Image (cartoon, rainbow over all chains, first blue to last red; front, side):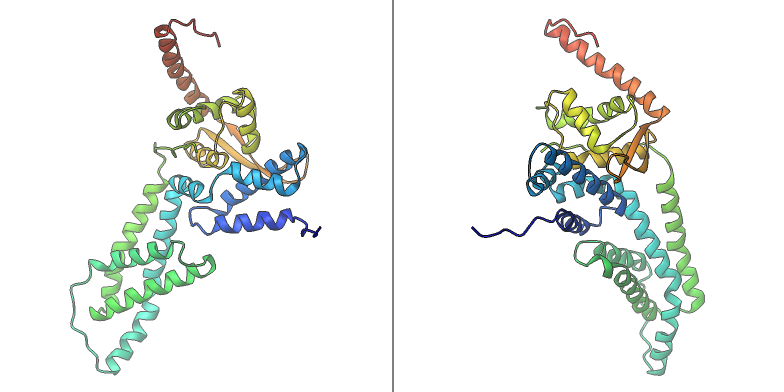
Length: 202
Length: 113
């Protein structure tokens, strides 16, 4: 009979955890807690006489399908997800002059003077769309942060250039999202009654 | 087996009630509820954690990571807070009303708790 590769619990737990981590709905602390749960469950099933592999499989099965748990965590972590989005938006707005001014100079040198377009209202919504998109599962976690910032800056630069925005105009325009971000952060920080997660049964 | 709706409604009072017996971590909490219900209440275990986190945000309970004495692994322990005890009182009242009414309608003598 062929020898099976011995089961490595730590490796299996890490693979399972990495699969869950693909969803942005979990914070590291959530994953730590779920991992601790699966390890406890595995240990007590093993004490009943199962092999480690069998115990692990049942423990994971009892914990529930990753996408279902992720959806449930989204309901409690919603304010956390929004806080991080707002923080990214504010950061991009504050940092964008660093990129904006050289681009403008280059364009003026090249005698490109795009007509001003009334795009100002779209500025926050476009940056927002980029942030939401990058929070999905499309991008590996390590690349999400720099990509988010880059895509937001691209939007800001393109639109500001088409508006021929001066630095003064920029700061004026920036106050709007900054105030919105601050208000948003304050809003989520307020303690209030919320609908709890629906504790579904499968 | 409980219906999905009843599970959703009963989780918070069950968790609060288990925690009045002392602090506990998620896995043990689930085991306690399973044993007490004679296996009738079977949760999808991972689903308990979002509920615990929501309860913590509502100040009903508080949590702390600590290293367990039995195996040296870190576990997140939950404790009931004063607000949680108050919420449990109101839950108790409401569940009692439903229970007593149904028992009267079905002409079954209510169990004393």
